[in-house]
Length: 133
Ligand SMILES: [Zn+2]
Image 1 (cartoon, rainbow, N blue to C red):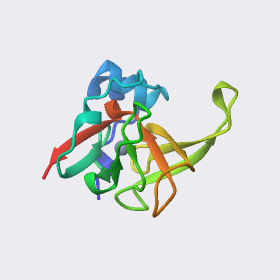
Image 2: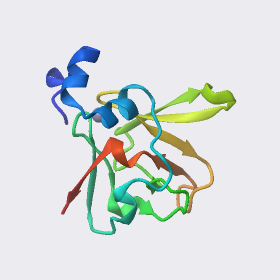
Image 3: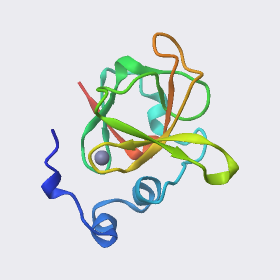
Image 4: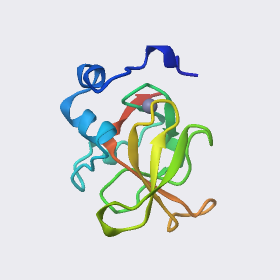
């Protein structure tokens, strides 16, 4: 588990820790431009960590090419790794996905993914860090 005692407590501390883009995505519920993530091309074995706190969120085993322009996974690395919330922003009802440790915004989950889960976790690559194994 990630040591939560080291997590930033204030917006200023988060700004100091994260890049401008990471801060916009994780702390301000941002969305990166479609097709912009370098992680779309990553096909190696490894784990995807939260850029905010380092928790392992997804693995290459659950990554798949959804064709949407955002890194997509059909399941988290661990069911405790992410939490979901109802999101009513932008005139839509969607299910937001956040990191369970730092509550950073990751993306959204939809019900049009592949088997075995039928889920599509549509995640901002800029909210993730890839660790090749
Ligand atoms: Zn996190």
